[in-house]
Length: 82
Image (cartoon, rainbow, N blue to C red; front, side):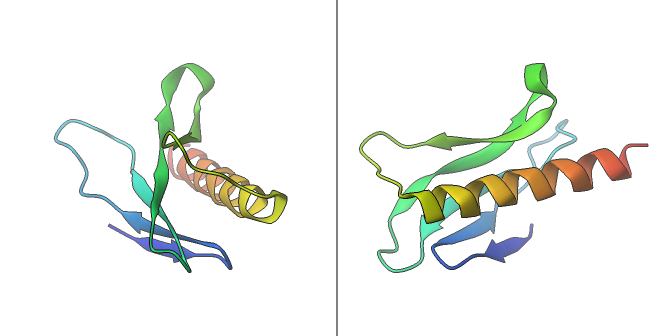
């Protein structure tokens, strides 16, 4: 389990489920402490994606931080799978 942080979002690693080869994180707002959604591997797209929880809102900076995290984790995953 790993944790990562940006200006707006904290990504807390979740325990890996038996049989899974990819990591998962919960995204939490830095100021509010509110759970925003999760980041996990989406096999059809071959990349990490963000699943927002219903009723959550995001501005451009927050979305950028989430997208940057997803991209970095996808690159890291693909680099270790070669």
